[in-house]
Image (cartoon, rainbow, N blue to C red):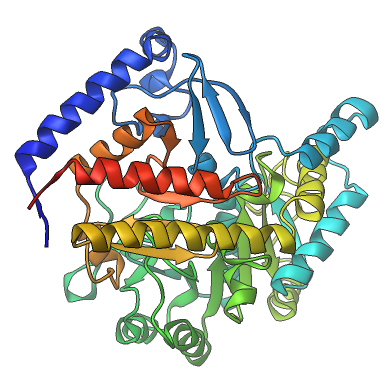
Length: 456
């Protein structure tokens, strides 16, 4: 097994940082001058760049991004999944243009026929019969959590350590010692202690799930089909089926978040893996980059909500805390219709997944050739490598495999060679415009930058 020389890592990282700064003077200047932006960026996550400042966007089409310094990149980040359809896909652009410039009306608080089309399409893909729209999956999760509490009359949500559900307060939780839920490190201003709203279990550990559900106060198990934001951690055989069975046994709903695992196929992991949720949330990519999200309800959950609203003890049309003025607007529903109808088709997913297969083969061959104690995992069109072997089984194991210095080197070195990986982690996503040549280019660059680290 090859050994990682930390001294060499520090030296090559310094070289790549210097190259990044030298290549991007206009981006650095724009960042330095952004004094009226909190953190110098329009959204604080955009500071997740190892070179000291982010690249500034000039233009983007398909899976190519051009920055203000004149460099063009093969984009495997794709807006951290938001641009899984590619940047400005032709069909989505045409649908948005028609609504925006020809028909008029971005948001009117009136429904359009596009909304029913999208709802029917989401039912066809994911199986949930009834849908409501939001402007992000965070909102979809947040509002669906409220409906789950209403439906069951229970106060708590169960999540898995190092899960990803956007900025939902209840989701920033870890299982702590003695069964006490703890707040994740870095959680900003939690409104109440997490133990009051959340129970936390360990991924791939059904005993921990049952232990938390046995308290009888969990309204819903909120989970991704595979952990994604801590690196892809796949479910072991029988785990998701076990979660479904335990939720039913203990009177909790099963709420599936397909934000990232929509990459598994045309109907996400829910269809590909035969999952049976009571509530499903999805967003980011279904609008081709236009802000949108959606949550789907089973007939039984919808009926339970209606019983409460009919009785007058809940309000979902005014002040009940579910909904937003811009949600389901004419522009976002037009974007979703065009994207789902013409871009993220079954044929597109088949091709994207085939390219991800090739990406994984290239990474695994490099890992094997160089004797790296690393692993690579895949969910459909999405792949990611982790600095651990065998592959982590839980969020905690994946978090323990993190290496900030190594992450920084790999991201910068790939960026300097014209390849963008997701800055939050080592995720690569395929879109309909990704080519086999792009995969081969990544494989060659990955081998080059990793080999530069190693001693024999």
